[in-house]
Length: 358
Image (cartoon, rainbow, N blue to C red):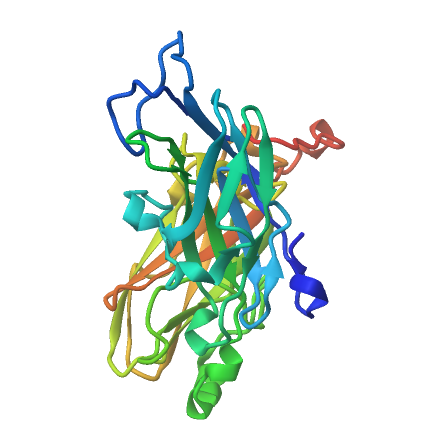
């Protein structure tokens, strides 16, 4: 779990990580910077580093509270000579990395602060570096999905070197009620449907990258839960609220989304105990486009449509609703539910709980 740095108060959150990054180069390599994998027979004084974990997921971060990530960046010298390396937070897009849809560059990478920015490592030695995270308490730093990267590179005067680029997905909590215009509160409550089963009536998190100076688009809640859904049935997951604090109207494109198979981050950013839905068509937002005037709040409902497939019973599923605005913003809402057996088949599945996905 995340812990407030040096005992500072703040909500505790969880972090999920996956895999390891490992790069190994010989001094004879012809490619500077990132380099190419070394041959099986390594030359003397080869250079190599590995970094763990390569991907982090940090949900429910509270702006204004400085925390220490519970999993440090661990760097190992896999080469045959002592090396120095540097650690620098950078925008993920500056490395040409393609982040998960809905996650955008953190506005200021320096909000991620390694306790040291240089290390000296003997051959075979590994050292860990704690990372502090402090997101300023500003209205448009709530309800965000961000991605930040760390450039871990060998340092020195040589022409060749090695580098690795671990990255982190950061999600901040929501406090929309603090920033909602007073006149919008009454209208929103009057027009909002009664909260369905599993919906969080309070504020929660999603993401967009916009300037707090000019306002932003706030999409909540963080997650919807349709509860138990029978095979072949449909159920309401609840409603999504879109608050526009910009001074211009925003056209929102709404799309159900499941992360692409085979991507490393796909294994890191899923809620523990859940499996990604097999088909984006399992989620049915009532609209695929929504015009939100300046200073106003709109809502749309989301339905779960469970296919008539007996093999999906007793799984906990998760998918995304992606909301992309004409202002350049990108926001996510998680949708969760559990499939139950079709009527008359319950006795065949009692006590059968599948912990992992298909």
